[in-house]
Length: 358
Image (cartoon, rainbow, N blue to C red; front, side, top):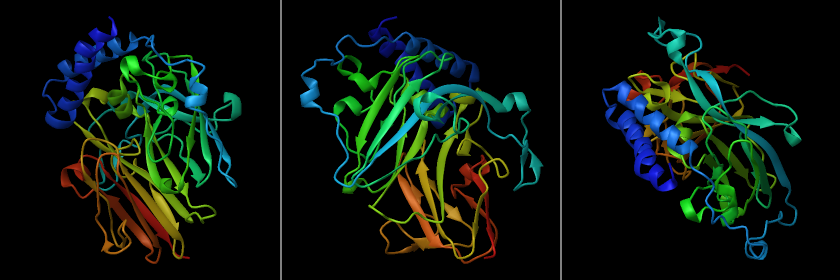
């Protein structure tokens, strides 16, 4: 199948199954699985566009940036690969003190993840996770990411597309059909190095994700992560957590329902249990990772909104937006954090926050 066939059939299949799963669930898991299989098959046959810009003159047109004076190169080696994932490894919902009505084999599915490696991809520095490794930098730095596509299961090109930073078209990390540039198509077995700048207006917490030919499915499968950029010399919080509110739908898990997840897991006792001590500076960076709007609520706590003006305890976060809950901890105990969209919390989007005395 050529690229035209992919967009006419496979691309439409991917869009259909995603919308069916997250919007109307589709009521027919078999049809969803067929659509996903068709999209994956089509995506695996997409070939590198012939018009990828490799003209040597582009070195002058789109030069690779260096850090600003006083800045550093923040270098990362990240591998993308598929892995089997269990969205509720404990088999229980601790909040309801009840077993999850799904056997282990029904809880496992094939995810697609980014994984942090040592320089030169010598060894893994951490397990494959959702979200992938958090990239840190300060204003004036450049972030250099060596991305390797090590996956052989899905056999598809992938990328890494950042939000919040400055980059040239070569480092956009997006597949644009015949207009794709060198960073927009990393085939299985290939590597590519992205370089992104961190100007003053990059301060904040931003998502990154796959933007290859099958980006919707593969992002939903787990190809996402976060970038944290601070002012030069700014102190990091004592406790800093990345909290992804996202879903695992039938197009990913093969189930006939949507799981609303936090960092790849569903239901308290499986979702992350965060910890802090009284007196610590605490920051939760919450990113919306699917098609829904969510709200972030921590029992027993309040903080200033993103504008720093109003007190809040249930702010809204939209698709690929970030909100930050930052406060000095003063309330010990076991607390719940969750999305306050009731159907989301009941479908797994809840967890524990434990505060110890000083």
